[in-house]
Image (cartoon, rainbow, N blue to C red; front, side, top):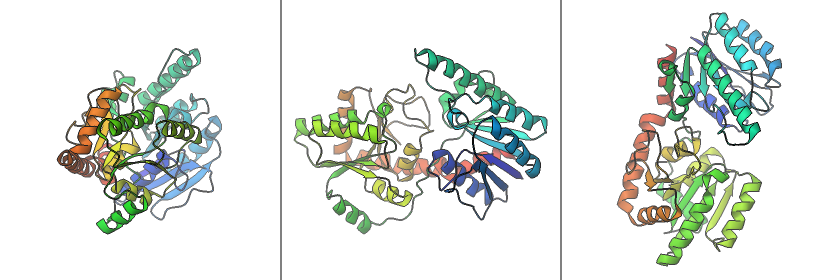
Length: 382
């Protein structure tokens, strides 16, 4: 079977969509799928011995349509698989031309499959936001209507596709952080490097952003340290970060007098990210402004599962994937007080941390490995 993936980025360009397409394609290629990747014209993008990478799209707008249709004509794929985010295919996030791509692909008797990594922005009372959000939803619905199947990476996205439930398939996002053997001696050496021997290491991985409320964790751990005279901890913010948000967080760290406890690793290779995650005792990720809380679309959460970590979050989740007390630990609410209670319990309860760690590792193997994700795709394609 011949597959054409359309993705705005591909390794070595840094991009979650590119990583997703890369790992998925690697797994599908093992089963003799003939794969082509149509992606951006960037010098960082490399070829792959298992399939053909076509870095030929200079701009993702209406001018790309004729280039894509020409490649479809040459390749004659059985499926065109679009990895979709609205801002990936249009500067202001309303890529109407994608509708014509879906329509023309279908009219040529080629099955069109779309994976929605994002559907639309969260609408607020800003008039511009309302207009863009409306058109994003309209584009997504029309593309979904023309698609053979609709893959969503988080269950709450199904709400955008009323009356198309029979087309929807939930496939979580896997991790671009791939587990490997990292022995106890190596872990102890890294802990020593961090000056964190016999300390509780709390970490978070991924882009710093206001909606993740990292300052809430900082204030919670500060209050815990004062209430219980607890200073045996280290907080790691793993990965590269937007300088604006990092500066704001550093100011909060200084205000709380936590500078000696907090470390920002900066950009790390995928293997080094896994090493830092491997020495983590408690992983935290808060999505406090999102109604479903943490979701299966998060590569950062997938990385924590890949490392088999006890994960703490707030607000619960609408997704059945997350099982409180088994593969994640939720504070009762998104309040700082409830977060403190949950965090202090997890710090002191080593058996609970062990249980959550085992549950996370099992969840990764059964639901988040790329072999599992590829199998779910194959069930759609074959």
